[in-house]
Image (cartoon, rainbow, N blue to C red; front, side):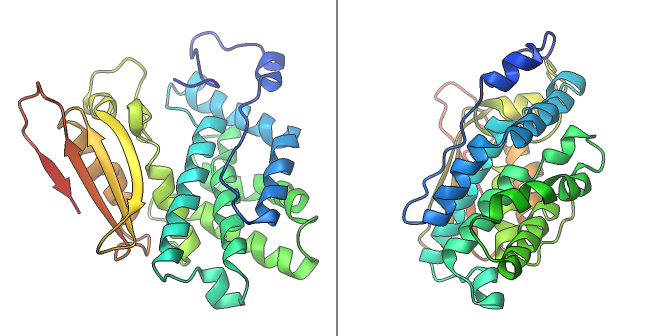
Length: 278
């Protein structure tokens, strides 16, 4: 569990959960617009309360894995890392190729989509991807207005919402940025942080395979711009990688740009699988 979801049985008081915030940090580098937006995110009381509500739905009511500020911070950092590796490999973000904006604007798209993709969980798990769109809209207006003119803000907001809806099952993103967020969401799996729902304390394949994932690293690839390297303590982790990550990568539009390598490095296991790649 995480800072935000420490006890599914006895939630901390609302006042305590709202006061003891998880700070959102990403490597803004030389992107002052992104830096300004992250500062605004960390001041946004309404957004943080939505993350608390989303996590209440997920952890306390459905006994699922974390869907709060820790999760979205991980996804945002993964999305930025993937996008920057793609750009370094010569891939042009869709907001650049289609609208003539900058790579820095694409970074804002993937970061905010990652931070807002699960806010619909504050309403219900079922259909949460759709709910996230209208829940996110006023927040996007708040965050983007100081940075963009009205017309550009409309385009950036639409691209963010496209990336949000693209993370659902069968999402079929039409942009590079949507594909990035879709894949990044699936990469929050190390140390048992499964994106596949399972009941707390269960010993089924979902729980066992999630516990087998020790680390996830996003690296520059030799053949493809991005290589995801997953270290497993047990070959049961292959289920997690194949069932979740492969499904999210398929149809993301990034299949030709991202490779995945999952390796068992435990010394004591009877290794049914030594290496798994796609």
